[in-house]
Image (cartoon, rainbow, N blue to C red; front, top):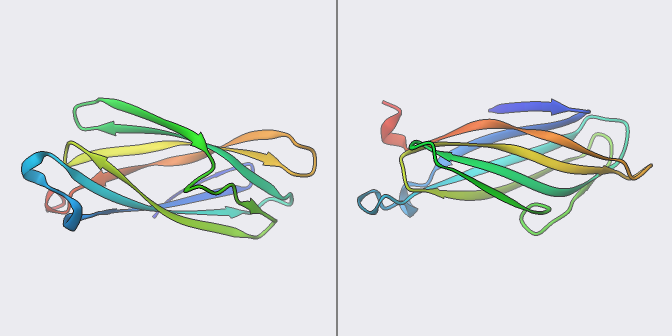
Length: 128
C-alpha cells in the first residue's frame, strides 16, 4: 500500500488489475484502485475537489478534475476516515496515477491541497 501525509491528511492507495473487464487484444486494460483518506489533523475538513494525472506507458498524460470523489464531498472530523473504490482504463498494460485533493478546513474555511501519492497500474501478467 502506498501512502502520503499532507497537513495531517493521510492518503493510502491500493491498485488492482481487473482481468475480467480487460480486453488485451483491443488494448483495453481496466484497473481499480481503493483510496483511504484519514484525517490525522485536529481540525474537521471537507474534500472539495480532485485532480488526477494519469500516465500511460507511451508517456501520454491525461488529467481528470472534478468535484469530490465518486459523487461525494465527504467531511472528516479528526480521527475519521473515508474509503472509496474507483477505476481507470488504459490503452497499455502499464501506467501510473497521482494527483491532489483540495480540502477545506471547516473551522476557518481555508483551502489546502493533499497529495495523492503516485501508484502504478500494471497488468498481472507483467509482474512475473
